[in-house]
Image (cartoon, rainbow, N blue to C red; front, top):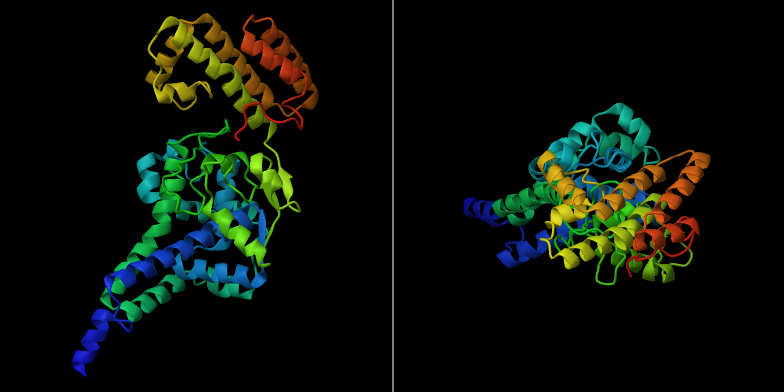
Length: 399
């Protein structure tokens, strides 16, 4: 009897091999990823997709079991992140807290932010508030991972505790660390959003599409995160499969490329005017000017970091980097004009007074047309004609 108990403690009820344990871990962690990206993020936070009530509750249960995260708290923290991305009010910006803090202590930042009752009241509205949410999932949020530890121990013995430990670290590292940290620090950008969000695909392609972070910040309420042909959103694939069997209903998708043909009953979400205009300015005016300058003068190209900083005026650079960039620009008068016009346009696009914005836009267009810079003049003409301010396609938008 004693030997049987020892064997049970060592190997669990399944007496599984390493391969079976790894497969179990992969399935469990992927289900948790889907719970976060599909339910907590796309459905509850941004209302871009609705799930069948039974499936929605299954997501709630799985979140409680594997992460101990409370839906209202997660939603509130993420909504505040979007409202104040990469500012001092952002709950988890690597530019405020530091990239290493986000990578290794992102959960601590989330926990601290979620304890703010005022933030929960402002940003946590519309989340589940039934009996089981109040008395089990919220009040006893730590019971879930405890129950999961017991299950893991029973199934796999002492090896199950290693599996459980990896599960407990999976979301904190990949979501709080990689997506919230690296996703605002390194990667490529399709859109010039006011924050520093970036796509880190194909790195972390297994996190359900969350790696397409810049796309998401450009279209926060879209159920589909991919916008270019080479991009793959695993979460969107799952949504399409669930929708095909009646378990999901897509409410909003991004108004770009192939998304126009998908889910015709869903509302099409266009780019915000500010993002649309500044993205087009960078691609149609700034980039051609920089490339022409490097070709013409055979000067050394800027580093990738400084090159990208031209899109936002060097807002995120250190003092030394900004001084280097400004010196490079000042030595090239026509680039200095372009950067000056970009700064004015960015401020104009954030003006809330419609009458003032219209008058300022007229003055900006006149100054751009008088600059003598061909690309800037062409952009000013397109802007004045309403190509960027209304429903016309965005010049240079992703395919």
